[in-house]
Length: 270
Image (cartoon, rainbow, N blue to C red; front, side):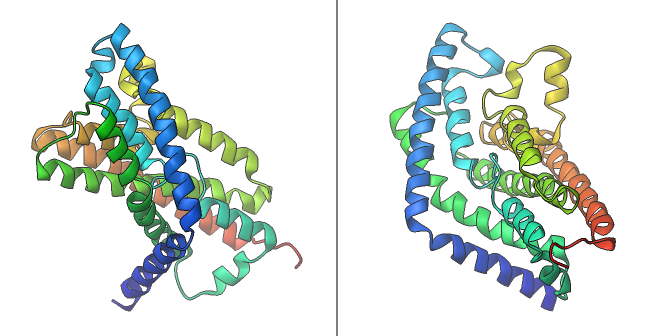
């Protein structure tokens, strides 16, 4: 119970920390909204020429766009958050202080990420989605249960995103400068999450494989839950189970890599 209270405190502290960056939050909301309009008009042209592309009608496609903008910062689809901080602490040697703490390193950073994601979901998620709903015809659900399942799916997406970026961050134990892998991770997340185009657009074996990769759990699955493409108990259980499965795999992989890294730590300066 004390450990649970500690991690809850870490999450709350992270939420308050990001809440202090008000100017950055306003700038992020503005950027998300402008970028959302650009992508939305691109989708409008594309879906006008190809109705029902990827199995979505135009309102569903536009909803997908604004869902992506709402989740962009919360799920850290373009990196950042704990990944940058961990890599920086490994590079400077401050990670040695983290390892002395009587807490689990991975759970500490996961709690911090949940706090960061909670703030960004409120701070940078609601306004862009509201702007999109005012300017375009969106296929937003009316059922409270769908919104509740969307929130559950979103939090699983946050955990999957953290699990992936934690693996990238730990690479700094060997590389010291993890910027190359971070860039590669951002490109993979942007493309295979569905941020550029819904994964349902891609046909054949490539599309099938893309929809089974962990990045699909970060945006494609939450968007499909919101669009009620995963209906019924079996559909929702399959969607959430897919995300939970990847979250477990990535967290276990991160724990294994962390164990290897911390058995032979080389800290700069000593």
